[in-house]
Image 1: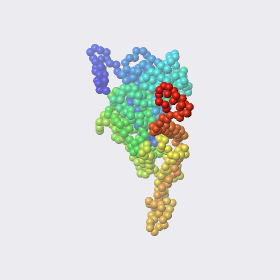
Image 2: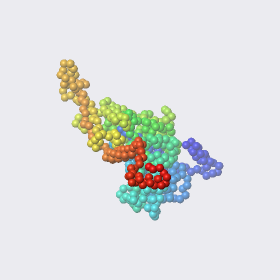
Image 3: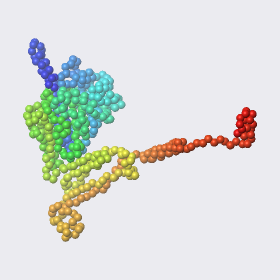
Image 4: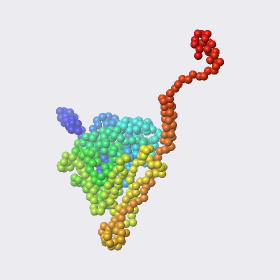
Length: 511
Protein backbone atom coordinates (compact mmCIF):
# COMPACT_ATOMS: atom_id res chain seq x y z
CA UNK A 1 0.00 0.00 0.00
CA UNK A 2 3.04 2.33 0.02
CA UNK A 3 2.86 3.30 -3.66
CA UNK A 4 -0.89 4.24 -3.75
CA UNK A 5 -0.52 6.26 -0.57
CA UNK A 6 2.50 8.15 -1.95
CA UNK A 7 0.59 8.89 -5.16
CA UNK A 8 -2.41 10.12 -3.18
CA UNK A 9 -0.19 12.41 -1.08
CA UNK A 10 1.52 13.80 -4.18
CA UNK A 11 -1.85 14.53 -5.78
CA UNK A 12 -2.95 16.44 -2.68
CA UNK A 13 0.20 18.54 -2.72
CA UNK A 14 -0.22 19.39 -6.39
CA UNK A 15 -3.82 20.47 -5.87
CA UNK A 16 -2.79 22.65 -2.95
CA UNK A 17 -0.16 24.64 -4.91
CA UNK A 18 0.51 26.01 -8.35
CA UNK A 19 -2.76 27.89 -8.67
CA UNK A 20 -4.86 24.69 -8.73
CA UNK A 21 -7.95 24.26 -6.58
CA UNK A 22 -7.27 23.16 -3.00
CA UNK A 23 -7.99 19.47 -2.30
CA UNK A 24 -11.24 18.92 -0.48
CA UNK A 25 -11.13 17.19 2.91
CA UNK A 26 -11.75 13.47 2.82
CA UNK A 27 -15.38 12.64 3.42
CA UNK A 28 -14.95 8.89 3.94
CA UNK A 29 -13.46 6.90 6.80
CA UNK A 30 -12.61 3.30 7.63
CA UNK A 31 -12.79 1.49 10.96
CA UNK A 32 -11.71 -2.11 11.44
CA UNK A 33 -11.85 -4.39 14.45
CA UNK A 34 -11.45 -8.02 15.44
CA UNK A 35 -13.25 -9.58 18.41
CA UNK A 36 -11.92 -12.87 19.81
CA UNK A 37 -14.41 -14.64 22.09
CA UNK A 38 -13.72 -17.91 23.96
CA UNK A 39 -16.92 -19.94 23.76
CA UNK A 40 -18.41 -22.09 26.54
CA UNK A 41 -17.63 -25.25 24.53
CA UNK A 42 -13.92 -24.45 24.52
CA UNK A 43 -13.93 -23.21 20.92
CA UNK A 44 -12.92 -19.70 19.89
CA UNK A 45 -14.92 -17.37 17.65
CA UNK A 46 -13.36 -14.57 15.63
CA UNK A 47 -15.55 -11.73 14.35
CA UNK A 48 -14.09 -9.27 11.83
CA UNK A 49 -15.83 -5.97 11.08
CA UNK A 50 -14.76 -3.42 8.48
CA UNK A 51 -16.93 -0.30 8.43
CA UNK A 52 -16.60 2.21 5.61
CA UNK A 53 -18.60 5.43 6.04
CA UNK A 54 -19.01 7.91 3.18
CA UNK A 55 -20.52 11.37 3.56
CA UNK A 56 -22.02 11.46 0.08
CA UNK A 57 -25.40 11.44 -1.61
CA UNK A 58 -25.14 8.30 -3.74
CA UNK A 59 -28.73 8.66 -4.92
CA UNK A 60 -27.83 11.80 -6.87
CA UNK A 61 -26.17 11.61 -10.25
CA UNK A 62 -22.66 12.80 -10.80
CA UNK A 63 -20.77 10.78 -8.17
CA UNK A 64 -17.67 9.62 -10.01
CA UNK A 65 -14.83 9.77 -7.45
CA UNK A 66 -14.50 6.78 -5.15
CA UNK A 67 -11.75 6.52 -2.54
CA UNK A 68 -12.60 3.98 0.15
CA UNK A 69 -16.17 3.06 -0.74
CA UNK A 70 -16.25 0.31 -3.44
CA UNK A 71 -17.27 1.75 -6.77
CA UNK A 72 -19.15 -1.39 -7.80
CA UNK A 73 -21.48 -1.17 -4.79
CA UNK A 74 -21.83 2.61 -5.00
CA UNK A 75 -23.03 2.38 -8.59
CA UNK A 76 -25.58 -0.27 -7.62
CA UNK A 77 -27.03 1.96 -4.92
CA UNK A 78 -27.29 4.87 -7.31
CA UNK A 79 -28.65 2.95 -10.30
CA UNK A 80 -31.27 0.82 -8.55
CA UNK A 81 -32.22 3.34 -5.80
CA UNK A 82 -31.31 0.97 -3.00
CA UNK A 83 -32.13 2.11 0.52
CA UNK A 84 -30.66 -0.91 2.35
CA UNK A 85 -28.89 -4.06 1.19
CA UNK A 86 -28.00 -7.09 3.34
CA UNK A 87 -26.20 -10.11 1.89
CA UNK A 88 -24.75 -13.06 3.82
CA UNK A 89 -23.00 -16.25 2.71
CA UNK A 90 -22.82 -18.86 5.47
CA UNK A 91 -21.38 -22.36 5.70
CA UNK A 92 -22.41 -24.33 8.78
CA UNK A 93 -24.87 -23.71 11.59
CA UNK A 94 -24.36 -21.59 14.69
CA UNK A 95 -24.91 -23.90 17.69
CA UNK A 96 -26.41 -21.57 20.26
CA UNK A 97 -26.61 -24.28 22.89
CA UNK A 98 -22.83 -24.77 22.97
CA UNK A 99 -21.55 -21.41 21.70
CA UNK A 100 -23.98 -18.91 23.17
CA UNK A 101 -25.50 -16.01 21.24
CA UNK A 102 -23.59 -14.63 18.22
CA UNK A 103 -23.12 -10.97 17.36
CA UNK A 104 -24.83 -11.50 14.00
CA UNK A 105 -27.05 -14.44 13.14
CA UNK A 106 -27.33 -15.73 9.57
CA UNK A 107 -28.96 -18.79 7.96
CA UNK A 108 -27.00 -21.48 6.19
CA UNK A 109 -26.50 -20.75 2.51
CA UNK A 110 -27.08 -17.37 0.86
CA UNK A 111 -29.44 -14.72 2.25
CA UNK A 112 -30.34 -11.47 0.49
CA UNK A 113 -32.85 -8.83 1.48
CA UNK A 114 -33.12 -5.34 0.03
CA UNK A 115 -35.15 -2.21 0.78
CA UNK A 116 -35.71 -0.06 -2.31
CA UNK A 117 -36.48 3.66 -2.38
CA UNK A 118 -40.08 4.78 -2.82
CA UNK A 119 -39.17 6.16 -6.25
CA UNK A 120 -38.70 2.68 -7.75
CA UNK A 121 -41.53 1.91 -10.18
CA UNK A 122 -40.98 -1.80 -10.92
CA UNK A 123 -39.57 -3.36 -7.75
CA UNK A 124 -39.57 -6.93 -9.10
CA UNK A 125 -37.53 -5.94 -12.15
CA UNK A 126 -35.00 -4.04 -10.04
CA UNK A 127 -34.83 -6.96 -7.61
CA UNK A 128 -34.09 -9.45 -10.40
CA UNK A 129 -31.45 -7.27 -12.05
CA UNK A 130 -29.80 -6.45 -8.73
CA UNK A 131 -29.55 -10.12 -7.70
CA UNK A 132 -28.00 -11.00 -11.08
CA UNK A 133 -25.34 -8.29 -10.71
CA UNK A 134 -24.57 -9.31 -7.13
CA UNK A 135 -24.19 -12.88 -8.36
CA UNK A 136 -21.39 -11.74 -10.64
CA UNK A 137 -19.71 -9.57 -8.02
CA UNK A 138 -19.56 -12.22 -5.28
CA UNK A 139 -19.37 -15.34 -7.52
CA UNK A 140 -22.53 -16.75 -5.93
CA UNK A 141 -25.69 -18.38 -7.29
CA UNK A 142 -27.86 -15.33 -6.60
CA UNK A 143 -28.99 -15.37 -10.22
CA UNK A 144 -31.28 -18.27 -9.27
CA UNK A 145 -33.40 -15.91 -7.18
CA UNK A 146 -36.82 -15.50 -8.79
CA UNK A 147 -40.46 -15.24 -7.82
CA UNK A 148 -40.54 -18.87 -6.60
CA UNK A 149 -38.13 -18.21 -3.73
CA UNK A 150 -38.78 -14.50 -3.06
CA UNK A 151 -41.09 -13.33 -0.28
CA UNK A 152 -42.22 -9.96 1.06
CA UNK A 153 -42.17 -10.04 4.88
CA UNK A 154 -44.42 -7.61 6.70
CA UNK A 155 -43.46 -8.08 10.37
CA UNK A 156 -39.74 -8.84 10.22
CA UNK A 157 -36.74 -7.26 8.49
CA UNK A 158 -37.43 -3.66 9.37
CA UNK A 159 -34.99 -1.05 8.02
CA UNK A 160 -31.87 -0.88 10.15
CA UNK A 161 -30.98 2.62 9.00
CA UNK A 162 -33.39 5.44 8.25
CA UNK A 163 -36.99 4.45 8.84
CA UNK A 164 -38.52 6.96 6.42
CA UNK A 165 -39.76 4.24 4.12
CA UNK A 166 -41.54 1.33 5.77
CA UNK A 167 -43.88 0.35 2.96
CA UNK A 168 -43.25 -3.37 2.62
CA UNK A 169 -44.03 -3.19 -1.08
CA UNK A 170 -40.42 -2.05 -1.53
CA UNK A 171 -38.93 -4.98 0.45
CA UNK A 172 -37.70 -8.24 -1.09
CA UNK A 173 -36.24 -11.26 0.76
CA UNK A 174 -34.80 -14.55 -0.50
CA UNK A 175 -32.71 -17.46 0.84
CA UNK A 176 -30.76 -20.11 -1.09
CA UNK A 177 -30.09 -22.79 1.56
CA UNK A 178 -28.05 -25.04 -0.76
CA UNK A 179 -25.46 -22.38 -1.59
CA UNK A 180 -21.94 -23.66 -0.89
CA UNK A 181 -19.48 -21.03 0.37
CA UNK A 182 -15.88 -21.38 -0.80
CA UNK A 183 -12.76 -19.38 -1.66
CA UNK A 184 -14.41 -18.00 -4.81
CA UNK A 185 -16.84 -16.09 -2.58
CA UNK A 186 -14.18 -14.86 -0.13
CA UNK A 187 -11.82 -13.42 -2.77
CA UNK A 188 -14.22 -10.76 -4.17
CA UNK A 189 -15.37 -9.99 -0.62
CA UNK A 190 -11.77 -9.17 0.37
CA UNK A 191 -11.26 -7.04 -2.74
CA UNK A 192 -13.95 -4.65 -1.48
CA UNK A 193 -11.74 -3.75 1.50
CA UNK A 194 -9.67 -0.58 1.08
CA UNK A 195 -6.46 -2.41 2.09
CA UNK A 196 -7.58 -5.65 0.45
CA UNK A 197 -5.50 -8.33 2.23
CA UNK A 198 -2.20 -6.39 2.25
CA UNK A 199 -2.23 -4.70 5.66
CA UNK A 200 -4.23 -4.41 8.85
CA UNK A 201 -6.60 -7.08 10.10
CA UNK A 202 -7.25 -8.31 6.56
CA UNK A 203 -3.85 -10.07 6.49
CA UNK A 204 -5.40 -12.72 8.74
CA UNK A 205 -7.99 -13.63 6.09
CA UNK A 206 -6.24 -16.73 4.83
CA UNK A 207 -8.72 -18.87 2.96
CA UNK A 208 -7.29 -22.29 3.83
CA UNK A 209 -7.60 -21.45 7.53
CA UNK A 210 -10.96 -19.67 7.46
CA UNK A 211 -12.71 -22.56 5.73
CA UNK A 212 -11.15 -25.19 8.01
CA UNK A 213 -13.55 -24.15 10.77
CA UNK A 214 -16.82 -25.30 12.29
CA UNK A 215 -18.67 -22.16 11.17
CA UNK A 216 -18.03 -19.54 8.49
CA UNK A 217 -20.25 -16.55 7.72
CA UNK A 218 -19.37 -13.50 5.64
CA UNK A 219 -21.77 -10.64 5.04
CA UNK A 220 -22.18 -7.22 3.44
CA UNK A 221 -24.53 -4.64 4.97
CA UNK A 222 -25.23 -1.27 3.31
CA UNK A 223 -27.52 1.33 4.88
CA UNK A 224 -27.89 5.12 5.22
CA UNK A 225 -27.14 6.72 8.60
CA UNK A 226 -27.71 10.21 9.97
CA UNK A 227 -24.72 12.49 10.41
CA UNK A 228 -26.28 14.46 13.27
CA UNK A 229 -29.12 14.23 15.75
CA UNK A 230 -31.51 16.14 13.49
CA UNK A 231 -30.66 13.98 10.46
CA UNK A 232 -30.22 16.99 8.20
CA UNK A 233 -27.66 15.08 6.12
CA UNK A 234 -27.15 11.41 5.38
CA UNK A 235 -24.04 9.25 5.10
CA UNK A 236 -23.74 5.77 3.65
CA UNK A 237 -22.34 2.93 5.73
CA UNK A 238 -20.80 -0.26 4.34
CA UNK A 239 -20.21 -2.89 7.00
CA UNK A 240 -18.36 -6.05 5.98
CA UNK A 241 -18.46 -8.77 8.64
CA UNK A 242 -16.84 -12.18 8.88
CA UNK A 243 -17.46 -14.66 11.70
CA UNK A 244 -15.62 -17.98 12.06
CA UNK A 245 -15.52 -20.56 14.87
CA UNK A 246 -12.32 -22.52 15.37
CA UNK A 247 -12.62 -26.01 16.81
CA UNK A 248 -10.37 -26.18 19.88
CA UNK A 249 -9.75 -29.92 19.59
CA UNK A 250 -9.23 -30.55 15.88
CA UNK A 251 -5.47 -30.78 16.37
CA UNK A 252 -5.86 -33.55 18.92
CA UNK A 253 -3.68 -31.83 21.53
CA UNK A 254 -6.55 -31.39 23.96
CA UNK A 255 -5.50 -27.85 24.87
CA UNK A 256 -7.62 -24.71 24.97
CA UNK A 257 -4.67 -22.38 24.54
CA UNK A 258 -4.80 -20.30 21.38
CA UNK A 259 -2.82 -17.69 19.46
CA UNK A 260 -3.33 -15.68 16.29
CA UNK A 261 -0.69 -17.71 14.47
CA UNK A 262 -2.27 -20.99 15.52
CA UNK A 263 -5.69 -19.88 14.31
CA UNK A 264 -4.81 -17.96 11.14
CA UNK A 265 -1.23 -19.13 10.40
CA UNK A 266 -0.34 -15.43 10.32
CA UNK A 267 0.27 -12.52 12.66
CA UNK A 268 -0.56 -8.81 12.47
CA UNK A 269 2.41 -6.79 11.23
CA UNK A 270 0.85 -3.32 10.86
CA UNK A 271 -2.42 -1.46 10.80
CA UNK A 272 -4.19 -0.53 7.59
CA UNK A 273 -2.79 2.93 6.70
CA UNK A 274 -6.21 4.00 5.40
CA UNK A 275 -8.01 3.14 8.64
CA UNK A 276 -8.82 5.80 11.19
CA UNK A 277 -9.33 3.16 13.88
CA UNK A 278 -7.98 -0.40 14.12
CA UNK A 279 -8.59 -2.43 17.28
CA UNK A 280 -8.41 -6.03 18.46
CA UNK A 281 -10.71 -7.02 21.32
CA UNK A 282 -10.27 -10.17 23.41
CA UNK A 283 -13.10 -11.26 25.70
CA UNK A 284 -11.44 -11.87 29.07
CA UNK A 285 -14.64 -12.08 31.10
CA UNK A 286 -14.44 -14.79 33.74
CA UNK A 287 -16.88 -17.61 33.27
CA UNK A 288 -18.50 -18.39 36.59
CA UNK A 289 -19.38 -21.91 35.43
CA UNK A 290 -15.74 -22.86 34.83
CA UNK A 291 -12.95 -22.90 37.36
CA UNK A 292 -10.46 -21.24 34.98
CA UNK A 293 -9.10 -17.77 34.34
CA UNK A 294 -8.19 -16.44 30.91
CA UNK A 295 -4.84 -14.75 30.41
CA UNK A 296 -3.70 -12.89 27.31
CA UNK A 297 -0.25 -11.83 26.23
CA UNK A 298 1.22 -9.43 25.43
CA UNK A 299 -0.49 -7.15 27.98
CA UNK A 300 -3.28 -5.06 26.42
CA UNK A 301 -3.04 -1.31 25.99
CA UNK A 302 -6.37 -0.87 27.80
CA UNK A 303 -9.58 -2.66 28.79
CA UNK A 304 -13.18 -1.99 27.85
CA UNK A 305 -16.43 -3.02 29.50
CA UNK A 306 -19.67 -3.35 27.58
CA UNK A 307 -23.09 -4.93 27.96
CA UNK A 308 -23.47 -7.51 25.19
CA UNK A 309 -26.72 -9.44 24.82
CA UNK A 310 -27.72 -8.61 28.39
CA UNK A 311 -24.40 -9.68 29.90
CA UNK A 312 -21.57 -7.47 31.09
CA UNK A 313 -18.33 -8.37 29.33
CA UNK A 314 -14.74 -7.24 29.77
CA UNK A 315 -12.45 -6.93 26.77
CA UNK A 316 -8.71 -6.51 26.46
CA UNK A 317 -8.06 -3.80 23.84
CA UNK A 318 -5.11 -3.67 21.42
CA UNK A 319 -4.82 -0.48 19.39
CA UNK A 320 -2.95 -1.23 16.16
CA UNK A 321 -2.47 2.48 15.45
CA UNK A 322 -0.59 2.86 18.72
CA UNK A 323 3.19 2.44 18.13
CA UNK A 324 3.52 0.88 21.58
CA UNK A 325 1.57 -2.16 20.37
CA UNK A 326 4.43 -3.21 18.08
CA UNK A 327 7.24 -1.88 20.27
CA UNK A 328 8.24 -5.29 21.60
CA UNK A 329 8.37 -7.06 18.21
CA UNK A 330 7.68 -6.51 14.56
CA UNK A 331 4.39 -8.39 14.67
CA UNK A 332 1.50 -8.90 17.06
CA UNK A 333 0.75 -12.51 17.97
CA UNK A 334 -1.92 -12.56 20.64
CA UNK A 335 -1.84 -15.64 22.86
CA UNK A 336 -4.75 -16.88 24.92
CA UNK A 337 -3.96 -19.12 27.88
CA UNK A 338 -6.29 -20.70 30.39
CA UNK A 339 -4.82 -20.59 33.85
CA UNK A 340 -6.26 -23.67 35.47
CA UNK A 341 -6.87 -23.73 39.16
CA UNK A 342 -6.36 -26.80 41.28
CA UNK A 343 -8.47 -29.86 40.47
CA UNK A 344 -9.71 -28.33 37.10
CA UNK A 345 -11.15 -29.06 32.73
CA UNK A 346 -7.95 -31.66 31.46
CA UNK A 347 -9.06 -33.03 28.08
CA UNK A 348 -7.12 -35.29 25.75
CA UNK A 349 -8.65 -36.04 22.36
CA UNK A 350 -7.05 -38.15 19.66
CA UNK A 351 -9.05 -38.20 16.41
CA UNK A 352 -9.47 -41.43 14.53
CA UNK A 353 -7.89 -42.31 11.22
CA UNK A 354 -9.77 -44.45 8.75
CA UNK A 355 -8.73 -48.12 9.03
CA UNK A 356 -5.79 -47.22 11.28
CA UNK A 357 -6.96 -46.25 14.78
CA UNK A 358 -10.18 -45.41 16.69
CA UNK A 359 -11.16 -42.25 18.55
CA UNK A 360 -9.80 -41.59 22.03
CA UNK A 361 -11.32 -39.07 24.45
CA UNK A 362 -10.04 -38.64 28.02
CA UNK A 363 -11.33 -36.08 30.51
CA UNK A 364 -10.39 -35.36 34.08
CA UNK A 365 -13.34 -33.70 35.81
CA UNK A 366 -14.70 -33.25 39.30
CA UNK A 367 -18.39 -34.06 39.67
CA UNK A 368 -20.52 -32.67 42.48
CA UNK A 369 -22.74 -34.98 44.48
CA UNK A 370 -26.20 -35.90 43.13
CA UNK A 371 -25.41 -34.47 39.70
CA UNK A 372 -25.82 -35.69 36.14
CA UNK A 373 -23.06 -35.19 33.59
CA UNK A 374 -23.60 -35.83 29.90
CA UNK A 375 -20.72 -36.14 27.42
CA UNK A 376 -21.44 -36.07 23.69
CA UNK A 377 -19.23 -35.95 20.61
CA UNK A 378 -20.04 -35.35 16.97
CA UNK A 379 -19.19 -37.87 14.29
CA UNK A 380 -19.86 -38.46 10.62
CA UNK A 381 -21.25 -41.68 9.23
CA UNK A 382 -19.45 -43.30 6.32
CA UNK A 383 -19.94 -46.41 4.21
CA UNK A 384 -17.49 -49.27 4.63
CA UNK A 385 -16.07 -51.45 1.93
CA UNK A 386 -18.31 -54.41 1.28
CA UNK A 387 -15.58 -56.77 2.48
CA UNK A 388 -15.38 -54.97 5.85
CA UNK A 389 -18.95 -55.68 6.93
CA UNK A 390 -19.66 -58.29 9.58
CA UNK A 391 -21.67 -61.42 8.72
CA UNK A 392 -24.78 -59.78 10.27
CA UNK A 393 -24.44 -56.07 9.41
CA UNK A 394 -28.18 -55.40 9.73
CA UNK A 395 -27.90 -56.16 13.43
CA UNK A 396 -25.68 -53.09 13.87
CA UNK A 397 -22.18 -52.27 15.00
CA UNK A 398 -21.00 -52.20 18.58
CA UNK A 399 -19.08 -49.29 20.10
CA UNK A 400 -16.63 -50.19 22.84
CA UNK A 401 -17.76 -49.41 26.40
CA UNK A 402 -16.47 -46.32 28.15
CA UNK A 403 -14.18 -46.51 31.15
CA UNK A 404 -14.85 -44.45 34.27
CA UNK A 405 -12.08 -44.27 36.86
CA UNK A 406 -13.15 -42.45 40.01
CA UNK A 407 -12.03 -41.63 43.52
CA UNK A 408 -15.11 -42.21 45.66
CA UNK A 409 -15.26 -40.59 49.12
CA UNK A 410 -15.33 -43.01 52.04
CA UNK A 411 -18.25 -43.00 54.43
CA UNK A 412 -16.03 -44.02 57.32
CA UNK A 413 -12.37 -43.55 58.00
CA UNK A 414 -10.14 -46.35 56.81
CA UNK A 415 -6.51 -47.17 56.33
CA UNK A 416 -4.57 -49.15 53.72
CA UNK A 417 -4.99 -52.88 54.21
CA UNK A 418 -2.14 -55.30 54.81
CA UNK A 419 -1.89 -57.18 51.54
CA UNK A 420 -0.56 -60.36 53.13
CA UNK A 421 -2.63 -60.67 56.31
CA UNK A 422 -5.98 -59.25 55.11
CA UNK A 423 -8.64 -61.26 53.23
CA UNK A 424 -8.42 -61.12 49.48
CA UNK A 425 -11.73 -59.29 49.03
CA UNK A 426 -10.57 -56.40 51.22
CA UNK A 427 -7.66 -55.69 48.88
CA UNK A 428 -9.73 -55.50 45.69
CA UNK A 429 -10.43 -51.78 46.20
CA UNK A 430 -7.16 -49.81 46.47
CA UNK A 431 -7.25 -46.94 48.94
CA UNK A 432 -5.44 -43.73 47.94
CA UNK A 433 -5.82 -42.14 51.35
CA UNK A 434 -8.10 -42.30 54.37
CA UNK A 435 -10.85 -40.23 52.69
CA UNK A 436 -11.40 -41.97 49.33
CA UNK A 437 -10.90 -45.21 47.45
CA UNK A 438 -10.34 -45.98 43.79
CA UNK A 439 -13.10 -47.50 41.61
CA UNK A 440 -13.12 -48.32 37.91
CA UNK A 441 -16.49 -48.68 36.16
CA UNK A 442 -17.48 -49.68 32.63
CA UNK A 443 -20.53 -48.68 30.65
CA UNK A 444 -22.57 -50.91 28.38
CA UNK A 445 -21.46 -51.28 24.76
CA UNK A 446 -23.40 -49.09 22.39
CA UNK A 447 -25.20 -50.60 19.42
CA UNK A 448 -25.22 -48.26 16.43
CA UNK A 449 -27.17 -48.80 13.23
CA UNK A 450 -25.11 -47.74 10.23
CA UNK A 451 -26.11 -47.51 6.57
CA UNK A 452 -25.94 -51.03 5.14
CA UNK A 453 -26.02 -51.84 1.42
CA UNK A 454 -28.25 -54.52 -0.11
CA UNK A 455 -26.03 -57.58 -0.05
CA UNK A 456 -28.44 -59.57 -2.24
CA UNK A 457 -27.30 -57.60 -5.26
CA UNK A 458 -23.59 -58.51 -4.85
CA UNK A 459 -24.67 -62.14 -4.36
CA UNK A 460 -26.68 -62.10 -7.58
CA UNK A 461 -23.82 -60.45 -9.43
CA UNK A 462 -21.36 -63.04 -8.15
CA UNK A 463 -23.65 -65.92 -9.15
CA UNK A 464 -24.28 -64.47 -12.60
CA UNK A 465 -20.60 -63.77 -13.16
CA UNK A 466 -19.58 -67.28 -12.10
CA UNK A 467 -22.21 -68.81 -14.38
CA UNK A 468 -21.12 -66.78 -17.39
CA UNK A 469 -17.45 -67.52 -16.76
CA UNK A 470 -18.12 -71.23 -16.32
CA UNK A 471 -20.13 -71.50 -19.55
CA UNK A 472 -17.68 -69.47 -21.60
CA UNK A 473 -14.64 -71.18 -20.12
CA UNK A 474 -16.10 -74.66 -20.70
CA UNK A 475 -16.95 -73.91 -24.31
CA UNK A 476 -13.53 -72.47 -25.10
CA UNK A 477 -11.80 -75.34 -23.27
CA UNK A 478 -13.65 -77.95 -25.34
CA UNK A 479 -12.81 -76.13 -28.56
CA UNK A 480 -9.13 -75.89 -27.68
CA UNK A 481 -8.57 -79.43 -26.34
CA UNK A 482 -10.93 -81.68 -28.36
CA UNK A 483 -9.61 -83.54 -31.48
CA UNK A 484 -11.86 -83.85 -34.54
CA UNK A 485 -11.75 -86.76 -37.12
CA UNK A 486 -13.59 -86.90 -40.45
CA UNK A 487 -15.56 -90.11 -40.81
CA UNK A 488 -17.22 -91.19 -44.05
CA UNK A 489 -20.83 -92.24 -43.77
CA UNK A 490 -21.67 -95.94 -44.32
CA UNK A 491 -23.24 -96.61 -47.72
CA UNK A 492 -25.63 -99.46 -48.58
CA UNK A 493 -24.68 -102.21 -51.07
CA UNK A 494 -27.11 -100.95 -53.71
CA UNK A 495 -25.62 -97.50 -53.63
CA UNK A 496 -22.10 -98.95 -53.76
CA UNK A 497 -23.04 -101.18 -56.76
CA UNK A 498 -24.56 -98.27 -58.68
CA UNK A 499 -21.54 -96.11 -57.94
CA UNK A 500 -19.14 -98.75 -59.27
CA UNK A 501 -21.16 -99.12 -62.51
CA UNK A 502 -20.95 -95.39 -63.09
CA UNK A 503 -17.25 -95.37 -62.29
CA UNK A 504 -16.65 -98.29 -64.71
CA UNK A 505 -18.44 -96.43 -67.49
CA UNK A 506 -16.28 -93.41 -66.81
CA UNK A 507 -13.15 -95.54 -66.68
CA UNK A 508 -12.51 -94.94 -63.02
CA UNK A 509 -11.40 -97.67 -60.63
CA UNK A 510 -14.24 -99.07 -58.52
CA UNK A 511 -14.65 -98.30 -54.86
